[in-house]
Length: 298
Ligand SMILES: [Zn+2]
Image 1: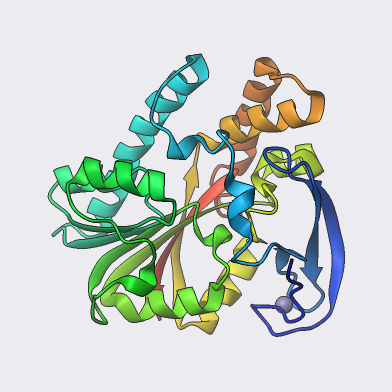
Image 2: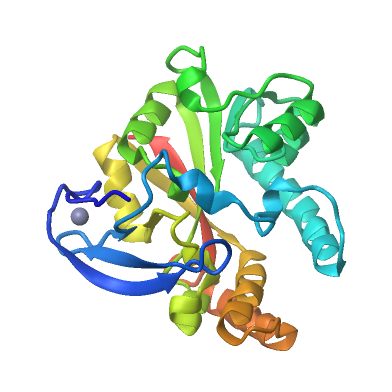
């Protein structure tokens, strides 16, 4: 385990305990989420070091790494995934109508890369998990790199860099963000999807909220702390988009962690309520269970 003594966002050195959360999917150990007393950044602290975190991914619960649809929920998940893949594609085509070069970091089994490739994008992917990486390589027919450090690309190479539920898993946070900025074209966009601990479902489930997902999630970004972190790297939030389906999936897992049963009615009603409360209104920005930050160079 490693203890973070200095806030990665503001360099502050004073933290308060925010919430104790159990790892419900793999180890059943309890971890602390702490909050920086200066900038309010939320982080899992202490956390497993980079060399030891692999053990905390040893579970079939990591559904994004497996493609076989065994039961009803997996089939529903598959349908939703196909829909969200098309929504993501639509989003990047609106941001860069000419299509171009796209890097997907943490591409899993390559579903998003494959969708973009078929649409005419030039695709590059990274994925640390060897099994998922192999499936991705078979899907797109070209090599996938284990991590960004091995990529041969020069500065200003990419029109789009995407990280779908990935940044919260990255140990070297500041190093990664400066890498992203250097490799992005001046007119390029970075898409970062992360859970939103200020969403309605996070408030309802508290320490049972499945998207805390400790210790795999090292950080728990709010709009404020994301904004500060990006500004440190000369990056700017261009817009924030909602992710409508995460509220249902996260509520389903959270009710299971809280009560031991999958309560579909409660999951559905919390999901609907969370999306209703998280929708964009005149007075504030989107606030759904997960958010997509669309980011530009300053
Ligand atoms: Zn701080």
